[in-house]
Amino acid sequence: ASGSMMAESIRGKTVAQAENILSRFKNMFLEDKDPQFEEELEDLESMESVKKIPARIKCAVLPWNTLERALERASKRSA
Image (cartoon, rainbow, N blue to C red; front, side):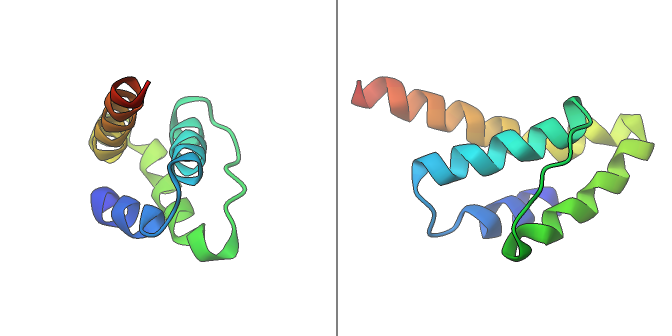
């Protein structure tokens, strides 16, 4: 579910926009911060309930970690 939601949320976005969404999503889990998602992304906030089951956090964040690594590698190649 998290991966599908991620793909939908970054579709058509710039790299900078995708990085911003990524950061807010991960901070929602890892730093317990309010992501303040725009209305079009508020479905991502439904994943916040996963925090109640710590063993599921890794599963929810895994696709986002993969996106983060892909963006980092792409950035290094273009530098």
